[in-house]
Length: 360
Image 1 (cartoon, one colour):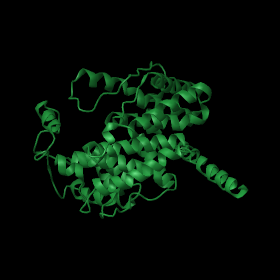
Image 2: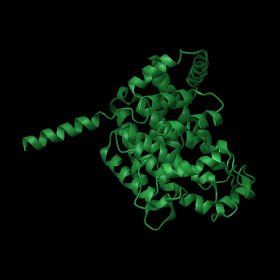
Image 3: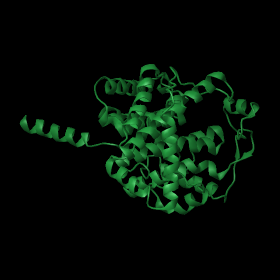
Image 4: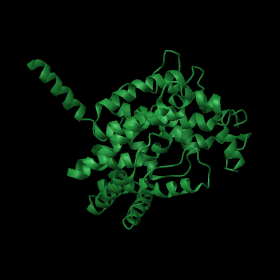
């Protein structure tokens, strides 16, 4: 019995060491501080970031009770209201990171006030296309969670945990529904996984990893294509499916887990193969006319609504694949040249991504 107890304590201690998986750990923060002043280019990037963070100190929280983006056309009042409220996500993250870089408590207090406001008002509805917008809130919490105590910590963690459980228990997750196996599920797994790592919740993490294996098996194909590409006839949705899977794979890797970039399902599919399939289109060696044979009415509705990029026959623009490339280069440094070619505009996020890759 004593041996069993000691083993359990070792496992718990080991798991409690999973800190700042979602955001940046202390070593990476220290590296970022040095990089901020290492070159004129980096100094300029940081000054812009610093100016942005300072401007957010005067903004008031604008939480919304229910996030509504999924299935709504551009111009819909509910979607507009949600988009305005979601501006808080980048604010709380930027403020949290600036606090970690400077130690100025003003940034900590403001980031925390935004998190608390959302935790009090926002009600999860188990829709991953809506909940995927919470990424920056989870990152913000991950950056400052060790500095939050008492009721505030309990309130925020309750909100995040309820969001994850709403996804797991959603009717949209039921067997036989398309939303249980298409891009919805990729975003669902990412949401549950990032919350699991932010809260150090082993149950959420284990559930996510098990479901990710199933998703790779059923959603991705051995030839590199995906269920979403087949249904929508659009690179846009192949990318929208791969992006959350890559985000999740990076978190699992940072937690010293299995490499889900190269992981191959029983059907022969893998995230790596689906990224490799996309690369000739990124390079412009191949072209694709988007949405010509889509089976989804919403795609046609957006085309009728004159939303950019959704008209059938629109040629795929390689730069639209940047969200995937910025993530996949974490696992495959051979993609760096292509990333630098497509990602022409320098940003502070590029510096953060580079630090994550180099600390791998």
